[in-house]
Image 1: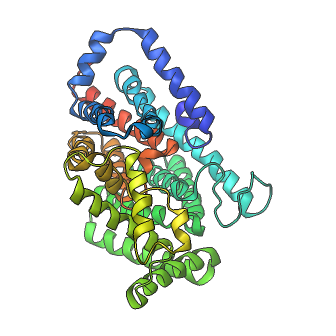
Image 2: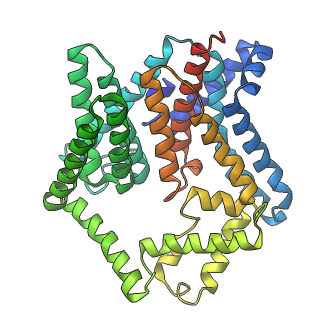
Image 3: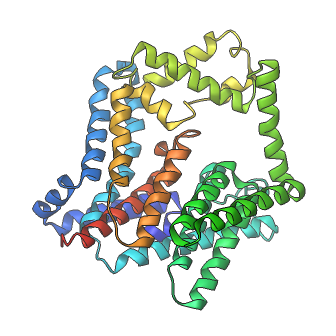
Length: 389
């Protein structure tokens, strides 16, 4: 139920996350569970990062403590990693993945109903097609679901299931490339290359075919899909304004300004950063004092650093960023023989490391829950293969 509800409901994520943790506590056996957690470098690095974030409250301005605590409490969604990692039975690994795909299928059907105007979900328009979450993160979910479906198809021996999974992937891809979000589109193309390299013998030929298919997809969409064309032209115009006119009062310019301000924050507080919540006040003050950007209308739409790397660096410095990156380094170091789960590991890491350049998924409930579920499955599979049961 947790995996199924993950793409569908904020309240559902809260309820089933809490239920999983409660059942895990009731289950007992904490000596064995503690041993598993501290002996796994991934979970240990995650704990160290969270502890450092809590420790950083000591240099947060007193007026911002409540805001900082509100920021940190979002990390509780990551706690689901521990129940799944230490208590999940092996036969449930595939069931969790299929349950997630089933939830994404429900979401995708709702997206198609919005597109064909069969029904209305809140104020969602044909321009976004995202029934439950911000369109950028929905594009990430769609890309991940499409790659997961293809991954299953590449590793299945049942012809009917292969055809069903390929069809499902095509439907996810269709919604994704109708203009839901450029971030997910880039993730899908890169992820597709990864899957091709891992699953096909004639790698050069497969990569060439994949590259040609990508060009055809983007070219066709630009010619025939108005939403995709508008968003592509929007980015092109922003780049032209910045390069030729030195004009940063646009969406892309606003994101770049946050990177510039983060660099200034790092120069002033390189090791331990400005402080959680204090970094938002610093951002606002810097935007107001910037000679070119202070009069931009888009300034009022920028409430945070647009990039996970720069946000964490400004909050807790280079030291905190290193703690954060070790989480992904040790997840990458997890050795898994199961070809399908290993592909999921690489795609998961690639997905988040790319998204960290343009947004802050570790502030968002859906993204945190997705990372918690998939990373827990990965290290659980490792434990089974290592015979630590």
